Each structure stands twice: as structure tokens, then as C-alpha cells.
Amino acid sequence: MTPQSFRLHRQGWTIFGAVSALCLAGCSTTTYVVKVDAISKPASVTGATIASPQSYRIKSKNPALGEESLRYREAADLVKTALSGKGLYEAPSTEKADMIVELDYGMEKAKTKVESVNVPVYAQTGGGVRYEQVPVVDQRGISSVRTVAVYDSPNTDLVGYDDRYQQVTLYEKYLRITARENRPGPEGRPPAEVWSVSATTEDESNDLRKYLPIMASATIGYIGKDSANQQQVKITDPSRLTDFVKKGLPESAPVAATATPKPAG
Image 1: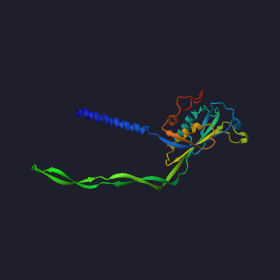
Image 2 (image 1 turned 180 degrees about the vertical axis):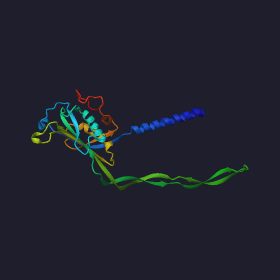
Image 3 (image 1 turned 180 degrees about the horizontal axis):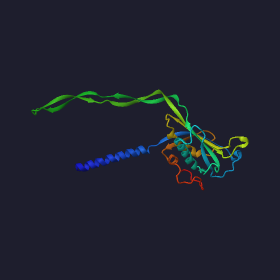
Image 4 (image 1 turned 90 degrees about the vertical axis):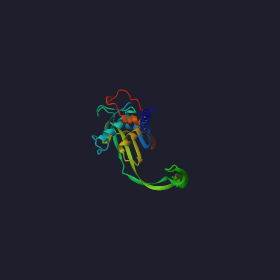
């Protein structure tokens, strides 16, 4: 192999290694645990006579969120995509909507707790100085033996585990979606609730934007259903489900569909 071909060969392997590293980084996945509560009111209770698919208009339940903010519009788009996965579609106007979907999201006040952490304990073994005799030849060509010091690096070995306590700060992120009939309730009461679903997740991250698509993904299987009690849903990101929610609805799609959209696989 010529020096030039060797350099090209080595360069090729360097590029391949960099691409492989990027692929491994991009292909890594994380699993999140989301707690989901869902309630669905039967038509006999709400008096609803809406056939599937149902149309809706979405609005903010919390006036502080501001429907014109970029964060709200991003959250609303995620929820619209999640709703499309259950065959629901956005009506062209509020008057023509079957339901009003109220959106609320945010993060609770941070809280701290002390938890036990299993920490590995390492110790250095071996190593030190030893002496060896090596042959040497001086400038006159005379051979002799010289004693030299050789330094051996110590080994770092796992010797056990130790329980340590540390304080951690946890942030609970939430996403709440409530669907109400798009007509006044009797005797001036609020419109009847058709269904609602709430998703929460808690860990040390305070990045709400990162968790909104994860929580929206967790709600898809419970929209319009009754969970009976709180369910723990494991969401892997990236995955087909989270990619579906993040991608959003096509901009060219009509506001009110005439056919039921195919649920996310």
C-alpha cells in the first residue's frame, strides 16, 4: 500500500467512524413514564347525539397561556395531531364544531426530595516501582548492563457499592385536554363535559417544551375513553408514535375532513 493510498484508506475509516458515531447518537432512544387519567361521559348523561367522526375547535383553558404565543400554538398543534389519531378533526368555525376542546398545560412548582443512590466504589491495586537490568552500548561500542527503574501503573478495580443520599429537584409537567359540548348547558350551567384526559410526568428536567409531544403521545390511546384509574404509559422517543405527533398535520389538509383519518400505527 502506497503512502497516498494509506492516507486515503485512513481518511475513509475516519469519515466512516464519524458517520457511525452520528448514527448511533441519532438512533439512541429514551423511555419516559407518563401517568394518564381519562374520563368519558356516556351520551345518555351528556345528551350528545354526535356521530363519529366528531369535529372540534380548540381553545386555551388557562387565560394566562395566551393563544397567540408561539408555545401555545405549538402545544395546540401537538394536541390537534393527537386528536387526528383518534379520528377527530378541526371544524372550519366554532359554530360548526361539535365540541370545544379546552387545552391546559404547564409545570408545577419544583419540589425536592432525598433519595438513596447506589454508587460504585473503586480501589487501586498493584502498580509501583520495579528494577530491571537492560543491556546498553556506549559511544565506544562497549556493551554493559544497567539497572533501570520501571514504573507500573496501578489497576483500578470495582470493589463494591456504597449507598449515598442526595437531594434531587423534581418538576412535574402536565397536559390536560377537556372536550365539552358546543352548546350551552341547561339553566345557565357550563356546557356538558364529553371526555377529558390528563397526562403528567415527573423527573429532574424542567424542559416543558421537550415533554409536550411526549405527553401528547401518551394521551392518544385514552382520548374519548375512561381509564377507570390512573395508568402508567411508557413512551419511547423517538418512535413512530412520537414522530407522528411531532410531525403535525399537513398544512395542505382541509380543516374539516370528510373521512375519518387513519389512527396512528
